[in-house]
Length: 145
Image (cartoon, rainbow, N blue to C red):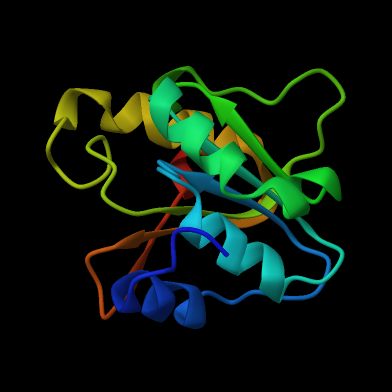
C-alpha cells in the first residue's frame, strides 16, 4: 500500500467508533492514507474523501486504485465549505476532519458554514470528529440540524 499511515493518523482511526457497513466522510483527505485505513475497517461500508487540492485528490486516487475499483472508496475534489451530497447520494454516518482550517480555528469565518454543510451531509444521528482531542474530539452539530 502506498502512503503508509502515520502513527498519529492511525491513533485517530483507532479512536473512531467505526462499524461494519458505515458510510464515512473524510474531510481534508490529502493523499488518502486515512481514508484507506478507514475503508479497511468498515467491511462493505463506503468512504468518501474530499479535499480542496486537485493534487491531493490525484495522489489519493493513484494510491488507492484497488479500493477505488471496489466502489467502496471514492474521492472528490471540493472545498468543505462548498461540499454537498450529490443527487441521490446517501448521507454519511460519520465525518472526520484532521487539520481542517475551518474547524481548527485557522479560518473561523468559515466555521459556521462548514458545520452546516457537514450536518446536512450526515444522517440525523451522524457525528463529526476532529483532531485536537486525545486523539479526537467530537464537534456537536445539534444547532445545525
